[in-house]
Amino acid sequence: MAREQRLDPEVELIWEDFHAAVNVPSEQLRQWLLTRGSGEQAFGPDPDLDLPEPGRQILAVLRKRKVDLTPADVEVMRAAIDRIRVLVDERPGDGNADDEWRHALLDLGHDVLVER
Image 1 (cartoon, rainbow, N blue to C red):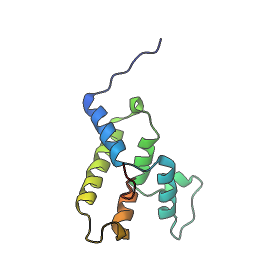
Image 2 (image 1 turned 45 degrees about the vertical axis):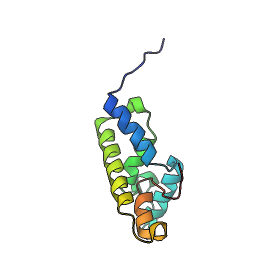
Image 3 (image 1 turned 135 degrees about the vertical axis):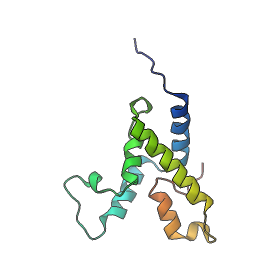
């Protein structure tokens, strides 16, 4: 019989907020980060290790089950939620047409063009 694991209610809320804020599927985020991290340097033997931060950490959390979260993962989720909220609140005058702003959000796994 499977044992049901209980999580801290705060972690449950952070999990929900994180997955609402990070609206890009993990494989799409990985592809975006690989593109952003490629630059002029070649990839190492494990391309995932060359992904830019904090996107790599966010991607690692997206690949986990809720019951497998560590305290460090919870901090990554909190930081991502906070940073996404700040960037969305600081929406530039030209909005979605501002590539720098939109790319900063995409680096965190949030696409302003995705409607929920």
